[in-house]
Amino acid sequence: MTLVEGKLKVINGKKIAIVSTRWNHFIVDRLVEGAEDAFLRHGGKDEDITHVIIPGAFELPMVVDQLLASGKYDAVCALGAVIRGATPHFDYVSAEATKGIASAALTFNKPVAFGLLTTDNIDQAIEDANKATGKDLSGNFKFINGDIREIDDCKQACSGVNYVLHQAAL
Ligand code: INI
Image (cartoon, rainbow, N blue to C red; front, side, top):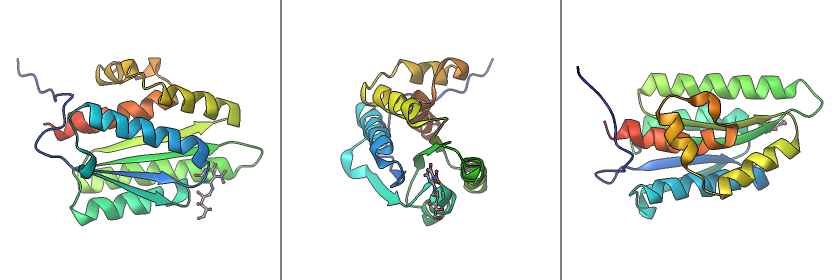
């Protein structure tokens, strides 16, 4: 049997870019804290994190694409929050952001963490963001084990970072 498995460790000074949105920044800033914390706790160095702040989730694909194209980063972590509210705008923004981020990852064949919260209302988003600041990493390991169903949106954001490290370590 051949087992291919990364390590939950940042090795050889891997560099990561975290992209976060100003839209819903009071939520998204909590995700940034969680992502930075996860990177540092797994052996990454503060100087190897570049944090890019952009307007909203719709812009995430373009910026993820540019960061990967620059060749400067081993992985990118995309963070944002789209809150449904009362308009169909939610569906367009979240669908384009999701498709675009996935497409950039496939184009450049580099790890991209998908940390976009998509919630029905602001209360759900706050709840998720609070869990991120709790820095509960247990969900990350579930994610690595492939048990994605058990973790909520917020833990996906954090675990995405670990997934990035996991991939980057290969
Ligand atoms: N951007 C978000 O990141 N979250 C949202 O909830 C949101 N809503 O609801 O509209 C949102 N809109 C802005 C959009 O992402 C672009 O930044 C904007 O349209 C400019 O291109």
